[in-house]
Length: 298
Length: 263
Image 1: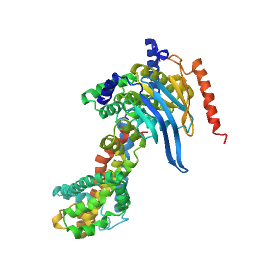
Image 2: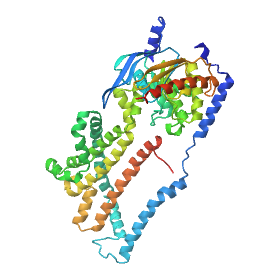
Image 3: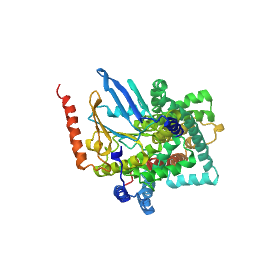
């Protein structure tokens, strides 16, 4: 070994260090956040323009008398009036809150059930063989189909709403986690094992964080399914005991032949769906992907 | 860490005479044509502080052998013993993209039970050792290929193993970076006194780095020949003695490969 001893002189070390610093500098580039004005023009302006175009076309249909029947197509002003009335009566936020609170609570239940279920399906061979295919099949079953049996089993009450939400969202959440876990690169597992991350520690430190992007995708889809199933349930199963959510509002509008009210409900349903995605899921997903370098910004 | 230290102290009196001992190891896998022998009766010792390269063409089972030493797989027969759990570096950096460079190193520290208060400082030290001071908060995708392999090296060193296993760690890097990392690895090896078992199919790389080059024959893999490399460090890959020995080894390697074309 004596013949192969390293004779690193200080000058030599400095040379190597400087060389490395140069290589590092050459091969990396600083990522900069785009200025706010760019974000405004690239991201915020286009959807505003799209909404404006829809409003103009809509108003045009009314003004040019192409559709001249308020029972079929109310004017934007009529719908706005409906919103104003509901706001002045103090019922608008009530409608929204009734549905959102149901939707989010139901979604949290779906999370609490879907996550361990997904883990079980992903990790236990027998469970996967037994219910894996059913679980993916359930995803393509429209959750409206669950409303009639849920009403018969549970009656017209909130539990029936939650049951429908769960049946709609649990498969998405579980499947998202399963595919997230399936896609964990085997290299990460091997690297983890050589570092001593096996069993529960491996699941916690390696498998779960590696599966996070797939899991988040499942959550996002789970929320969309929750919201849809809830609206279906609210439209079909209306009862005075249930309180008026957005689905019930739509159904009330139909019964009262008030197309403006129907439009009001549709706009609100759409708005809530988009808002939750934009405020919760998209930022979460983008943050996860960006921190892993999986989001390419051009 | 505790385990490794106890082991080292306990062994101090009788002095562990190897960092890894591969004793008559064979490995076969179930293939389409029945059991396929991949490693055939391999015996090899790595002395404490020794740098050994395993050299061979495809099909010599060098990565399989490394997996066995790392404990990721079990030999079909024979025995492998190591002084503590070895650290392993792959051809791909295998850094976790959800953690920063520093946190990757801290995870290795955490998994071997280093208390939280000490982790940050230790991680910074290791980053400094691989000359990446100031990269603690960098994400993996923000680092160049060479920097990633150096963080991976720091993470492997964080395991505080006596033996570092390297599975073609520089094969995917460009030639300039690889050359620099050879110097770096030689320096770190000399500073830390680690034993290294380094797998490669690059003859010059093997000669540039190692004290001993072990040539594996292919299908099934077995030890064909060994060379002691007496050329003093620091070496350069383009040095005449390195080239000379590489030439000799390449001839033997080619002879081994030719045998497979003869029937």
